[in-house]
Length: 78
Image 1 (cartoon, helix red, strand yellow):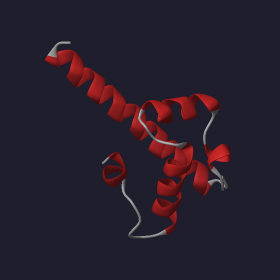
Image 2 (cartoon, one colour):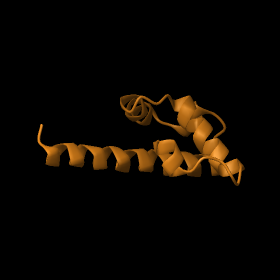
Image 3 (tube, rainbow, N blue to C red):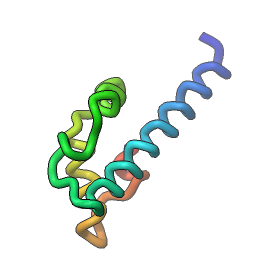
């Protein structure tokens, strides 16, 4: 695989992760109080492709919204 393709894959991964992060935070703000309420089946598959469970992302988003010093996007990204 070329270096350029690896960089595109990395950027696509980050963009998708960011979309899921933003969605999760908004879903929490709008009343989602469980991972199953927060993420669709397709989003769960996307999270799994990153090695994340829906519960992990729910916990990050929940803490990020509820606590001033909660995890940030960059922290969750790793």
